Amino acid sequence: MKIGIGYPQALDPSAALALVEDADRAGLDSVWIAENPYWPGAFATAGAVAARSRRIEIGIGVVSAFTRSPAVIAMEAGQVQRLSGGRLVLGLGVGGPRVLDDLGVSVAQPVAALEETLVVLRALFSDGIAAHEGPVHRLRDVRLSFPVEAPPLVVGTIGPRMLAMTAATADGVVISAHVPTAEIERIAREHRAAERPGTRGRITAFVAAALDDDPDRARARLKPDLAATMVRLLRIPSLQPVLTAGDLTPDDLAATAACAREDRPGEVADRVVDELCLAGDATAVAARLRRLADAGVDEVVLLQAAENPGFTAHLAALAACAREMR
Image (cartoon, rainbow, N blue to C red; front, top):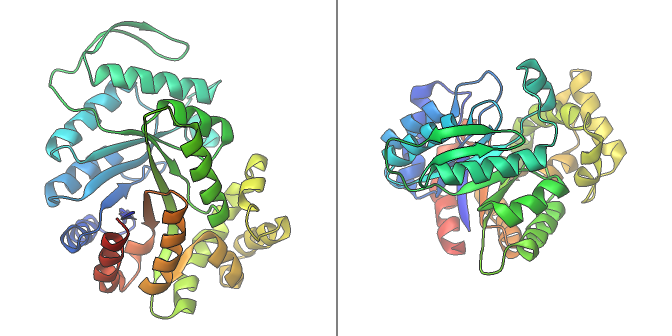
């Protein structure tokens, strides 16, 4: 198994890039850069990471496939691929409905639309497109002016229809954060079963994490974001079966969201954190990572961990854990 970290966008860029250098030297496998609405752009950040690192993989995880033309995505991703010496993994998703509405972007059939985008990108990374007339994209005489090896194209999702398309079409799947371990295991098994014969895509799981020798302190660092995230997730009814696939109940989810609405995030139950996140020292985290590796997960990306004080003290132990499970 590979172990990666989420790029710490909340830090000053100088501090964030210095931490990436530390992770690169320590032997962690990847750094993943999210593109959240109105935060720094993922591709510019990825270019800086490429310049400040030597061997670590650079994951774009993930960008909306519909806020840019696929030609622009290919231009940006292709240049990062060249700058990094072929270390890019390009993660695509749909994007939140509210954000897309605010930007005036309409996606009527997201699964089919993203599948079409994958086809278009593969063509652009190859010989280009003479003419393409699809339900979403219309391109004519579009070719990159520079040769580039196509990066792996992975899709961020936990929805069943998108997962089925991803197994058949993409190079891998990125499982969103705040998913119970039991559900990550189920998705990994079903993804493997649905893959095209002779192929093996990469399965990456994003997991919110905090490393600290004091497990209570680690949980406390995760509770505010977990509570706020639960408010958003509960607005999507189809996600409730996913969130309750483990030991949590709808009442547990509602109580967690209430902690955010009522400005008492410290009251999020410890067992909710333990179900949806990773909290503790490197030894405790490693035990959960081994369970995911046994389920077929290829890579776990620790989100938020790099933004917390003391993370660098655990880098060597995490890197050793990754080497042991490869």
